[in-house]
Amino acid sequence: MNASKRTPVIAGNWKMNLLPAGAKALVEELIPLTKDAKCKVVLCVPYIDLPTVLAAASGTNLKIGAQNCHWAASGAFTGEVSAAMLKDIGVEYVIVGHSERRSLFGDTSETVAQRARAALDAGLTVILCVGEVLQERRQNITLEVVRQQTKIALADVSAEELRRVIIAYEPVWAIGTGLTATAEQANEVNRAIRDLLAELYSQDIAESVIIQYGGSMNAANAAELLAQPDVDGGLIGGASLKAADFAAIVRAG
Ligand code: 13P
Image (cartoon, rainbow, N blue to C red; front, side):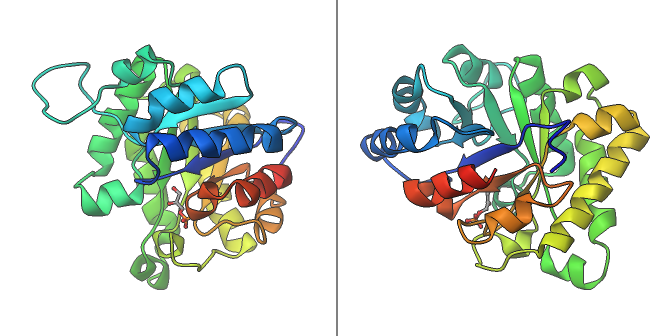
């Protein structure tokens, strides 16, 4: 992490966990543990928990995000939630392109780009997830895959809008598996993403973008990952559901 240019962002992705009562309890536990954080702290929670979590976190340094949004502003899209709806209730962040959305729910780099577009139009900050599957890493095409996912998702994003984009490099083989990319592997891919941003925008802009690592980040391995020059934070799944573990990662951020 290059501290002179970027403030790290530690984000929890609660995935499909916690009913509103449990969500409120976790936020209340986190508030005293994270109130002196030097990094930004974001909680990306299930839609149903958003009103409760927004109320519980009101007046604190905790920022709240959703885990997906639809690309249309409104319309006949049964079961979907628009970026404008999220913005209206006070949500500031939204994850797009998580590998679980890509592998289980049919998201492609093109639909991810549309979701990012809608989120930016609504005034949200996007956490754009990219990452290779194990076979792609074994075939030594990780950097190509991640570059392509990033390039397609950002095709329609201006330099000005990129200030509201965080990129999360999440190797799919490291998600929920207990396997973590080594600090060097994480930094190599994050650096390649930053180099791509320099090609697409400018070196200065590339140096200002937050690029996180995600995939089995926990209290024990966070400090080493976050010490890498191009790892500017984390997107944390399992460990974000335990207040003490998440707070330890925030302290390392
Ligand atoms: P885990 O931290 O549980 O591996 O999940 C990572 C992730 O998918 C965050 O978006």
